[in-house]
Structures are given as structure tokens and as C-alpha cells.
Length: 141
Image 1 (cartoon, rainbow, N blue to C red):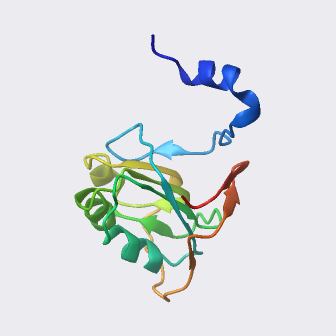
Image 2 (cartoon, helix red, strand yellow):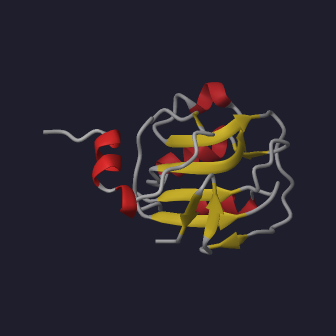
Image 3 (cartoon, rainbow, N blue to C red):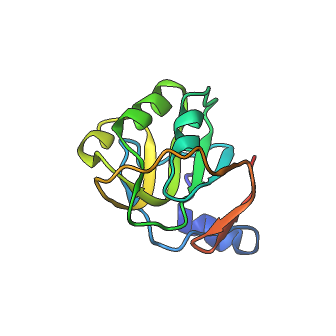
């Protein structure tokens, strides 16, 4: 017997957190899961770039981009590198770009929206810290 997500919510309501329905799918994989790595960065995807170049080990990158709708935290080149290096997906509290290509890459990508504008590269941000957005608190690991 296969449980649905609503069944899991019903059975484990006091033990789970559910994201507010703000995110759209942009990657080729609609479902993904794994241990999480957290990033907090605002309109600068330097840490995203560095992380997708590392070994993913079937993990998921959770990016708190501050909800910015002005710059894209992920594009086709970084998504392809993430898939190549074994990352399962990215959950981005911000935007993506190159959406026509992202949907062809076997990688889960959920984001608030899309915009064609790239980020600045200032090398700013924080890795592996607790982040909260969309009604959920994320702890690294």
C-alpha cells in the first residue's frame, strides 16, 4: 500500500512541517528528497555555484534567497552541474532562470518564480545555518 502526502499529513500532523504553497516546479524531476544543506544568500549565488560544484551525495540544497524576485539564484549551467555531481534538487526561496532548459535536466528545482536577470557575485552568504521561510524551519542535515 502506498501512502499519499495527505495521508502522511493526517497520520503525522504534530511531527511534520508543510511549506506554504508558494513554489513552482522548474526542474525535470518533480519529486525529490534527501538530507539538506542550507544556504542563506541575498541576490548573490556565489555559494550556490560553489556548492553545486561539490559532490551532492543525493542531498538537497535549501536556499534562503530572502524571497527576492529581482535576481535568479539558479540557471541552466549551475543546475546541470548539480545534476552531474549527484544533487537531488534545490528548494529556492527566490527565482531561477533558463526555465526552458531547467525542465530538461534530471534535477528537482522548486522556486518562487523565474526572472532572466543573473545575480551579483560578491562571495556573500552563509552555509549550513538554520533558515526559515514559507512557514518551515530548516536545520542543516
